[in-house]
Image (cartoon, rainbow, N blue to C red; front, top):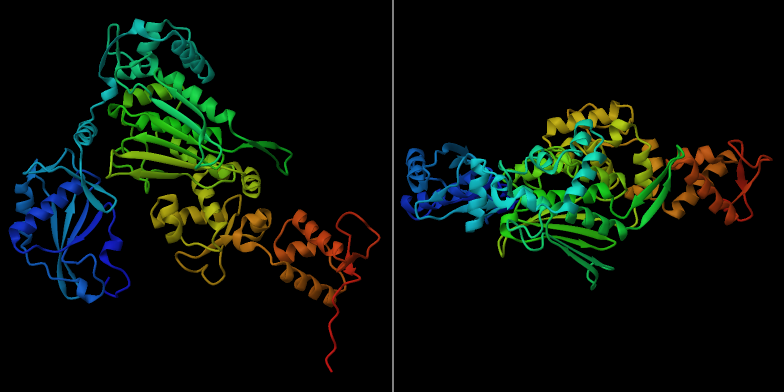
Length: 564
């Protein structure tokens, strides 16, 4: 900011805000009380007083004059319940600033005037009554799905119960397989879908009953378009029971997915779908589990060959953001409903589902998912975007041939994907992608250098640094080939290097091509075939197959011109 390169506004996010004092201490305290409420109702944060957020350079800094003790006491006085914040003096470039540190609240906070705000990205926005109720339940640990539904256990849908028993048998877990043979009442009790006696809780009603009062008439809506902006050619709506809607929605996606067969060096044949079913399953399960059924809006699945959008009502659970969703762990909005989903094998254990969604997308040669949270304008909603279309078979084949540890490690796969676009990265570059701090990210990078896969190496000029630059090793570059965007060869450069080598050594072979261009044996073969086809090279050895095959000057081999 002081250097004039960036404004304070460009640095603001969900946990940091810059502001200046108002015309008097009373207005300043009221303004900062509102900002403190905003952060306390989210994940906490810091308000820096004494910086103009739209100005750059030394002019952005204005001395704060309000007393620390006065500001702390005024925020305590102007908030409900009374909030305790930490106010610190900060000296920067000869100016006095104040840092107001606001912890994440244990309750829902408001100003004395009844204003309830919450931080969304870099803005403070008012919470709707539904949003206040949602936040209050989260803060108090109230599980809406465990409440009474008023529906009897005798009202469960027979087809839904039959599907529940099938799912339990498919888990392979002996305890759950035995449970599949229990009576309906015992099964409902074991899945914690009742409130005692013969009454279902809301999770039981939504999961097992038709026309659940606790949910929207349509809990799930599916649309398929041949192109993302085209007319829907297939559409389906499902009401409750949720266990049936979930399974049939996955079938609808699978039925319209194209399969790409892929052969690996080990002889495996992989079947790669447009959208990996495991990733789709986790995206839809998360939407149904963490979407807010109290809003009575459905989960929407928008499907086309190139993209799959899964949109759910409500924001992410408090404390979870797109920037920490991989590492913050899972926090169920409705624990009773989430517990039954996990028992039935419809969702991963806590903290594993999102990881798996990212991992499956990269393993199939595609981009990592995007998680988007919309606010303002209308009701908040969360969208997971999966990118489909033809897979990058080079990446998919390379990942399939990695050791198990790296093949099943989300961090390693995200770093690999990143290095297909960038020549080298540091821990600081990678940290926001794997959503860890720089020290933990450095440990991951070093493991990929020294681990069994040997994927990375530190660059020669930086290997002695605390946080060196890392790049893919030569064998990884060769195996990934054109999947590495900066490693694509210019045909004229290829010709020049091969011609220069033959002029100096009189011949060339496949192994030499591999070393010169960092390619595998098959890519080297294709380069030689192209040069022979254009008569720049011709085979000079008697051998026609194997390592001993050599190539020399062809009929159109460019000779060096003699200087006069």
